[in-house]
Amino acid sequence: MGFRNLSGTDIVVNPGLSADPRFITHVGDAAALPFPDDSFDWILIVHALHHLGPAEHIDDVLKECDRVLKAGGRLAVLDFPASPQIHLAFWFFRRKFLLFFFVSEVLSRALIQEEWYFLKPYLKEWKLVRALLHHGRFDVERFRQEFFYYYLTLRKPAQSIAATSSRLSGANVNRSLTVVASGV
Ligand SMILES: C[S@@+](CC[C@H](N)C(=O)[O-])C[C@H]1O[C@@H](n2cnc3c(N)ncnc32)[C@H](O)[C@@H]1O
Image (cartoon, rainbow, N blue to C red; front, side):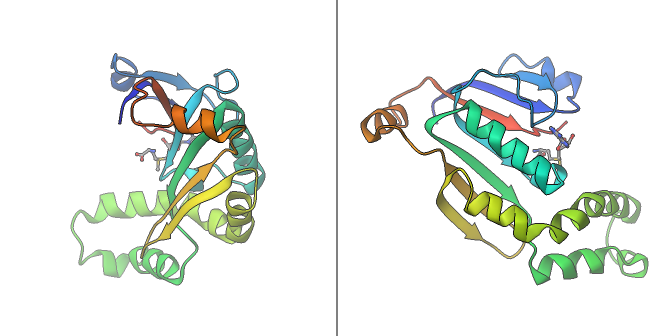
């Protein structure tokens, strides 16, 4: 996609990842990104928004994304919605007797319990989080909800359509991207 300036921020960064010369890693809170204003064309938050609660903190993260995105830049989010199937799936998988039927029971239980620890309060606040995402500081460019995930692309309002379209065109190979809560 022509991205040249790649980076990631997480409160915990795997040393193997930080040694990779293809991108720059930062250890820190997503609500205090170590970048100047208007730095990035794209920001990704993949499967991590539900780790960034409560809603006030998510709002701070979104403010910070707004600050470091260039005008017309995009923030893409992939996460769980508060759908009946998510509640049902986590209820189902957290039953010990049912986990017996699935491979790698101990690993599954640990992962699911850990996810649930973050997901439970996040789902309780979902209406507020959804409002922050859909009716906040960004324009909604795309939203698609699948069975277990939603994919959302938000766009920082552009100051000038001409400047933005040339900046975001595929011809510009210096586009920059950062991953917030990038993972270990
Ligand atoms: C489920 S993992 C997702 C990681 C990665 N995006 C992926 O898709 O594999 C959630 C990540 O959020 C990070 N995280 C939690 N709170 C954070 C914060 N305040 N700032 C930055 N990262 C945070 C965790 O350390 C963890 O790596």
